[in-house]
Length: 341
Image (cartoon, rainbow, N blue to C red):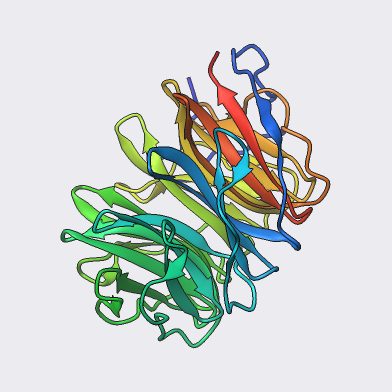
């Protein structure tokens, strides 16, 4: 049985991290060749569907969005040239039956029709600093984007009207680097992390935080992700302190011990393989590690192949199996089959 926090919510101390479980029957293979075409760091990637195809949309320092058919490994159409100084946040949404990409252009957001290859409306402006993350959700029947930025705030946007919803969400003391959206007790929530080493949970309808900040990290929180573990809604946070932490969002308490990754975490995603909830993380060793979150151990050995650090990773399904797509400073994306067999 996994060890649980004591009554104070403090995870137990461990003398050393657990060893990888090599017995689990996962194939962990790269699918196809690297996706090439970007002329610069690939900072952001998202997975979605378009015309029945599983696609990825990527962006980076070459100021282009590129769309990929993940079944064939081929780029779809021409790159979408943008006016961004550098794209480092992208998400995919369905808006009135249209598949769109939402991405940052400096301190603003753009919405792009992926079928037509053109922007929708004007930029979404209001942040006073660079946007580092964006997440998609549904709030009161409206498709929304939540952005996190260097002005210490999050903003919520109605993608149908391209207008802000409510006031900026304030409370972080420093740049907000990460945001994820989920459902908790029927409410649409956001989870954020940033320079102040905290994780915060927001009730988006009320426009305020739920409970106190989640503390324990001893460095900047670079990434957050939301998922489920059994019947619990969870968040996973990744930090400069070289750990992942798993949080029960109903109790706002940590689950198990911090997961020691050995270096600064640069990318994080949460998903499922079979009946297991997994996290996929990367450090600056150019590889991916997959974690079984129920027991807090890595599965098998890291996935290697990139020749520079991984900027972002996302998890989805392809042909009925779980896969991950990683975006790297080596200018490439790679697709990984996670199984199970």
